[in-house]
Image 1 (cartoon, rainbow, N blue to C red):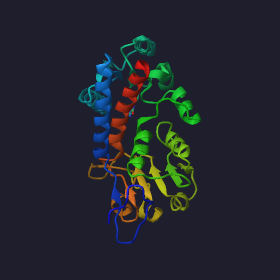
Image 2 (cartoon, protein in one colour):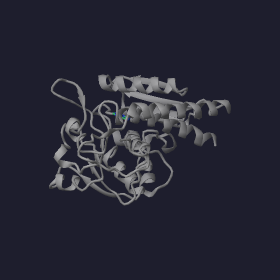
Image 3 (cartoon, rainbow, N blue to C red):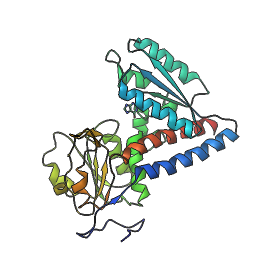
Image 4 (cartoon, helix red, strand yellow):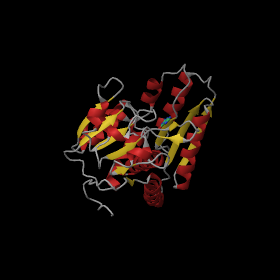
Length: 297
Ligand code: GUN
C-alpha cells in the first residue's frame, strides 16, 4: 500500500514505516538551489559563502570540506579560511567584521566547536545577522521566535522539509521534541509551533518520557544518545524524525532511535545515515542562496 502524499498517518500491524529519504530530498533541494544560483548569476551576482575553521579538529575539517564541496557543486562560491588553534579571539572577531563589510560575501559560517580560549557566543554574535546562514545568532533565534524573516538553523529546518515532503499537516498534532539544544531542540519546537502543532519539549530531567512520546503524532529525537527512542515508546503510525549522529558498538553511524524496532511501529521514519544529515547540509545552501537573493533584491 502506498500512502497518499497528504494522508494522515494510518497504520496496520503488518506494515513497516515508510522511510523518508534524506539523500533523495537533499538532491532535489540542491537542484532547486542550483537553479536559483543560475538566476542570480544571470543578474551578475555570484553567491558566496565564507567558512572559517579554527584549529585542527578532524571532524570539523571533514564537515567544512563537505560544505565547500556542496557549495561548489551547486554553483555557489565557498571560501574556507583555516586558522591555527592559537588564533587570538580578537583576530577572529576582526576577520568576521571584515567579512561583514565585504559586499561580495553573502553568508558567513564559523565552524564550531571553537578552541576553549574563545567565547563561541561572542564570536557568533559578531556575525552580521543578514549573513548568519547557520541561524545561530540571537537575532536569528529571535526572528524565528516571533515569526519574522531571518535564518533558520539548518538541522531543524531540514527536519521540517522532511515533514513537508510527506505532505504532513501539523495542525493540532502533538509533536514531542526530545532535546533542548539551542541549535536543534528549541528551534525545532518553535518551527513545529508555528505550524500549529501542540509541542512538548522533553529533556534529561523529563519525568516519564515514554508517557509523553506515546501520545506523540510526531517525535523528533535530538539528544545525541543511542536508543533514546525505542519501539515501546512510539504510538503506532507516528512520524519519527531522528536527528542523532552516534556510533554503535561496531563503530557504524546510528541515530538516537532504535531504528529496526521503531520502524515496525511508526508510520514514517528517517534513517541514519541518509536522513536528517544530508538535509542539514542542503539547508545551508538554501540559507546561503536566500542571503544572496535578499541582498540582490
Ligand atoms: N559544528 C557542528 N555542526 C555545525 C554547524 O551546523 N554549524 C557550525 N558552524 N558548526 C558546526
